[in-house]
Amino acid sequence: MEQEIDITTIDASGGGVGAGRARGGRPSQQDDLVCLRDPRSSAWLLVLADGMGGEGAGELASAGVVAVARQVWSRGDWRDLPGAVFLEQFCQDAHLELVRRGQHLTDASPHATVVALLLKGRHAFWAHVGDSRLYRIERGRVAGCTEDHSLVQERIRRGELAPDQAGAAPDQHQLLRGLGGARRPEVEHGYAPRRRGQCFALCSDGVWAHLSGEELADFAGRADPSAAVREALSLVLRRGGDQGDNAALIVVRAWPGPSLLRPRLRRAWSMIRGALVMRGRADATFSGR
Image (cartoon, rainbow, N blue to C red; front, side, top):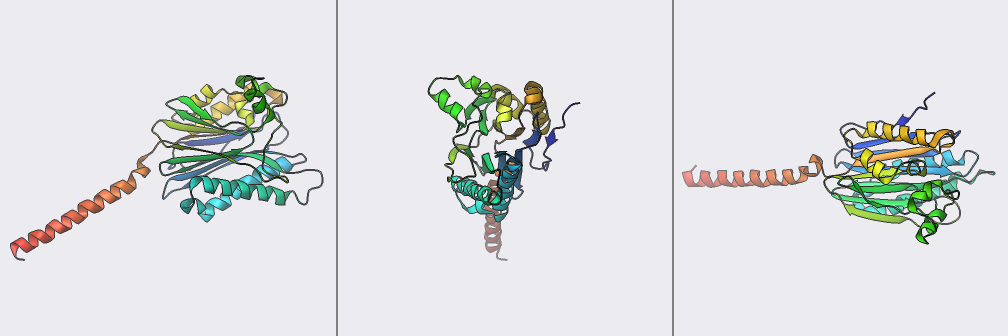
């Protein structure tokens, strides 16, 4: 029987964003995600987490990251803080939440990877810890990808392993950084201006282990993002088979839309209206009214 894919419902007025996850061949779902949007400014916070820690701690950890994302978004800190500062604060808050959740566990310890993208005005900020990835796509091609904080990535850096072999490496899951535990996480940040034709894909290792960057770029650029996510996860499930990992994916078309033009239109209309008012006063003075 075909496995069900959980597609996240996103307000259609937001447009350009699709998200979903699948359990794969695992007994539980330890990947979680959330897509948060401010309708007034069209700002987005997209967060994806992959939990681990044994004895149900993985689900607890990824759910904790998502819960903190909702909290910091509802507080509105992103409006006033620089994008990188906001994402750093979010990651550190999520880390502390996982530490708190693990205080009463005896045989498990909640840990998680995280990748987060903040779209704000004409700016795109992202942050990650662990091996959940962000792909930046320009004009249909991968222009950049986050580097995993993992033992496999160190082997790739030393030339011992080719990048396309990472997904099949036996030590793929050995991470060097993560949220939770005794050590404060070192968060890696990135930035790019938003451009027309730009897309992003955020995914857990259960996705990138089975889809190439070129395939993710193709799915991210499709007209219907939710349908694209469903097709991408279906392909991941087929390739992963009975032993496949949990899989989670968010795709977003991030180029500036009409909402980014509204402030300019409002300013232009104010100038035109002011000019008309001044002209009306001048006409009244000239006619002697």
